[in-house]
Length: 354
Image (cartoon, rainbow, N blue to C red; front, top):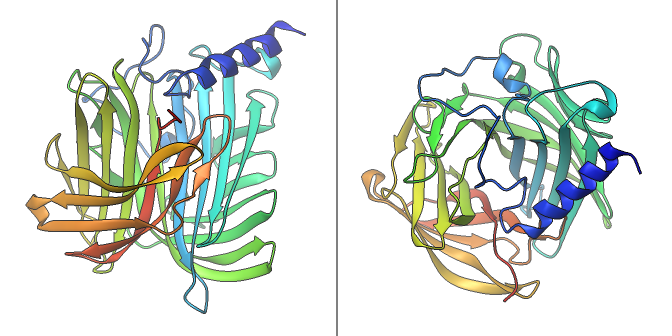
């Protein structure tokens, strides 16, 4: 076994043993670039990879429905994780790529993953033209002009499922945090983070029962950093919500084994104007749990953002939406009731069986 393959296996073993996974997001970032609040996001360049940062992802979720009103959810994610802060050709590349895909119905949940080494063409991201891929999974720009993320085609497949979708943005990109600088802890760990939460989607899901034509709404998150969590944070609860009035909400709760959780939120008006909220403005309270894969997972939540008169209850479309992959976690669509109605997505990491 050559040294590169051995390094890949060692990285996977170390990451799988960590509750945080994905290269130990709370560990020291020596040698890697660190986000700065003074730096500005630049498009379309920042749609591409940043090999001097340790961890990065292109992450899309969609709430979909068929002609009969049945709800579905899909997820497509490409992760880049670096063993060293540079890029190189062939097996000399220290960049690791991991793809996750999921499809959720009210009765079933499907998940698949792909793994690749950078530098050999099996996975990567280009900016001109924009394409993110791993094996035959792809997120490809179809925009004739303007921002490359304005129009996309998206495809993935796994055992028992596949999807092929087209996405069209109706509003501009949205920075998260302060102009894209998203703080994650009281100690100041942070990431660069922006979203496209205004996709209209149509396409086809392939299920064991046959093809299903769907339409709906999508949300793309772009985030990169080198140490986005503090050492004592061991998981997160993250939401992206499409409200029926046209507004959007991004929020997260980072759980800390030594203290109170750290929260952040961005209220996005129907015209795309963001209002960021600091730690403590948003509260996320678990209401009910479901035993999923031997672990108690919160699958019903109370979400409160008093500054926007927001008081919501989230209910999982399918409580058993467990991504049983190299780094296991829960992720699936939710329905919204309370002061506002709508649909969204919930992702929860760091929950393991007692």
